[in-house]
Image 1 (tube, rainbow, N blue to C red):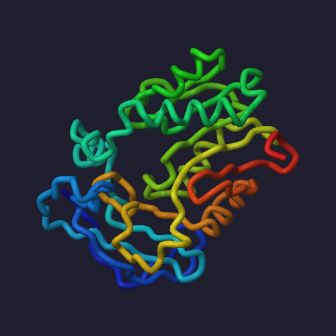
Image 2: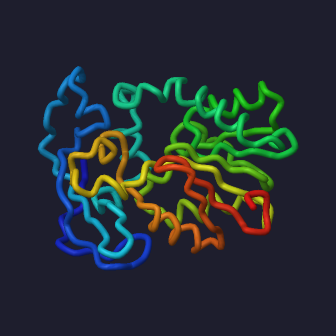
Length: 247
């Protein structure tokens, strides 16, 4: 396993602000590590240092900046991944389906892209409801890139997984219908958890949670592609063009 060396200071990956060291976790720290009935994973001895931006509050690590596709596939998104994210096998897709169908009345009139959609379960469920939907994910559905433009892009639990948040959003926006589309997404912000430091369950390198946002960091990120963000909660958000369907 190749991990990039420690930096005392860093330039924020979102706003270019000054970021200081925030804390360190063993690589085997997962989202389930804080649960009392979850087996404690053995320490790997691989420290993952996180920085926190003094301006926008983004918490992130440089540890995976140089990783290749194969590195991620071997060490994170492998056959044991579901042990650390059991909802990946179906529960999350079903709940997200209900959320989408109940909040977007015109969805059957749109093309929908589930970007970073795992093994495609949500796209399949949407299609069963009569929605023109496709899924794409670099680790599970990478054989064929989507074609054309989409009125709605959904990204559930995607933006905390990328070591390059600006590039990832720009890549997703390449599929967004110009001036009309919106991106509905989930990622848990850390605005109210700063006192927990590195003890917060969402900071979890074994799950691939390597970029933890605030509402401000998401606002700045989406403005880079000309979109505004509505924050429905600490977990659910939507990037939209004020003249488009999100208005």
